[in-house]
Length: 213
Ligand code: S3P
Image (cartoon, rainbow, N blue to C red; front, top):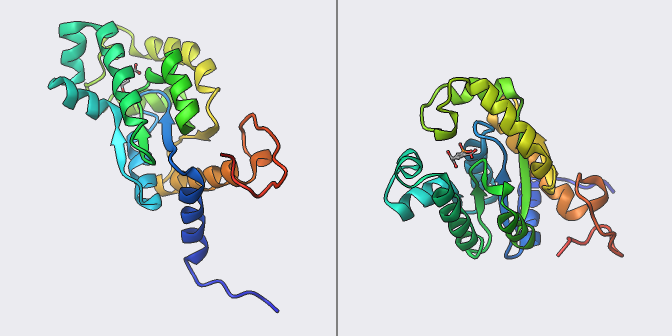
């Protein structure tokens, strides 16, 4: 006998299954400035019905200043310490969708915390896509250099070895946002339920359909 699936139910079931398998873990988006972490993260959160939090925004609220002002007044090391503290706190919030600033995952303690408390997803974007997107706004202190394209290239080279350590990698490119969100939901589901199909380094479980906990 054939099975009848109501339209839309398969997707909703997949999303509910992801949230159930996450338990207390967060989903953390990682990647370069302009990769689309906030835009995609907000939409993923809506689909999964999880709270969306943006680490940069939380840092600004905690400091009572904008990120460019924190860099200017206190310097980058101070910003990085605050960033690590804020992300550590947010990772204790239970299941959330968290977008992190581009440099956060490079810090060892933050990477370890994310590994312990979350599923990480790298939104990987090409240098030209990043450059085109970041040019639209003037809010990235690291790019206030005479050669932003060269700075982006150097940051990519330095950071990719860290970003490669995430559980899931997704190509962020100029297609409708919902397409990337669809891919992210499928990739999350695969990672949680079919570890052998995901891009992660995984430990085989006795039952391939049981979620990794
Ligand atoms: C930074 C990225 C920014 C912000 C800060 C530093 C970085 O966040 O945290 O300007 O080091 O790449 P986005 O990645 O959200 O732009």
